[in-house]
Length: 127
View 1 (cartoon, rainbow, N blue to C red):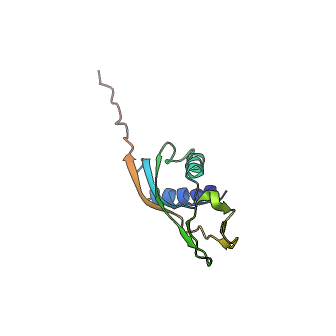
View 2 (view 1 turned 60 degrees about the vertical axis):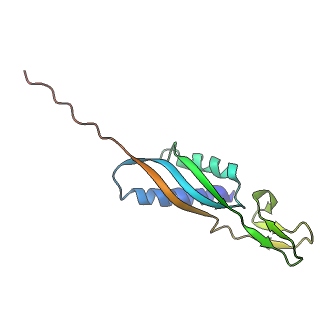
View 3 (view 1 turned 180 degrees about the horizontal axis):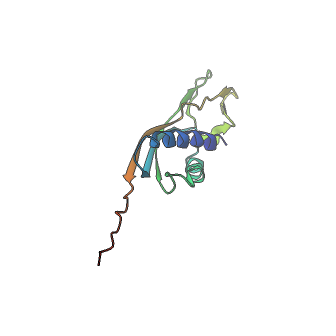
């Protein structure tokens, strides 16, 4: 399940960036994914990995970029998760197999943060 590993790396990167900021809650993480990633699996993986972090409960907004494979037989196809066997795409026309490198298929575009309100100390009236 490469989506889980990719989301784990994504969450780690966001958490590292958050360490330099004042305490906050993450509202939205906007990412761009290649068409070879399963949308549903990506969402579920994010929910799992974000538990117990400032990303818990954040919305994952996903922008899709179609990944096109051009086979030597002349077939051109958008690669989807359903067409992959692990990381291998197989041409439905000629049977040619091609490994799909997915390392660049998930990137953080931006993160929407909500500052945490720090409760002001309550002073008891003297008296």
